[in-house]
Length: 228
Ligand code: ADP
Ligand code: ADP
Image (tube, rainbow, N blue to C red; front, side, top):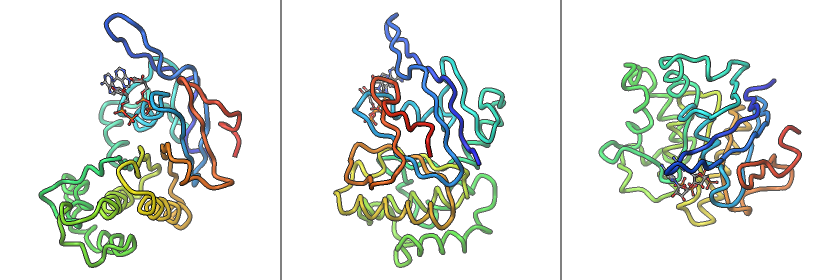
């Protein structure tokens, strides 16, 4: 069934009175359990689309629906809980907290809600699952880039989000490490049925049969933006 629906989405930035359209009337659908790659040249609007999908920014016009609910109808608190509970973000630069060890980084989203204690065993299991069982008490600066990204993946997954949004998750990694990170994401997608939308500009991570949304100048190039 459908998780995300993007309808006639437009985003325009205003720069010194010049209107710059970044997304131009784009539409697409993403089903639950899909693994979707967004590709395209730098500046084509990929990050902007991801930001809008995550409720981190608002469109100029058009709509995003998650489970048939338009994001535009959510209150500030509703958007906040969407970002906190339903969407896992994975960034190019990992965004881990330097002063916390791996385990506490994974638990960090649950500290404000007081659930870190009850989630602890699950967090350890997830760290083991991504191959970091021996590293749970290490801090980010004691880990390689690939290991740090795996911590970020475990952090995103612990929330059991409806959707994971990853913006160039391998951008700071060498190709081999990048492959390992995408393999983990593919496994989690398959085993946990987590819907994943990821931006990449490296075609080596994309396999035949993968669903790809190609962007150029704020539009989708391919017709399969609604095909599954
Ligand atoms: P991509 O992720 O494909 O590289 P982006 O979505 O980051 O593309 O950017 C698309 C275009 O929007 C670029 O021309 C960029 O300069 C512009 N842009 C992105 N964010 C902003 C912003 N906050 N304000 C103004 N322009 C922006
Ligand atoms: P990438 O798309 O490779 O992740 P960024 O999103 O950091 O890169 O930026 C893409 C482009 O958007 C860059 O040209 C950057 O200058 C521009 N950009 C990003 N954020 C803003 C902003 N807040 N205001 C103006 N331009 C921005």
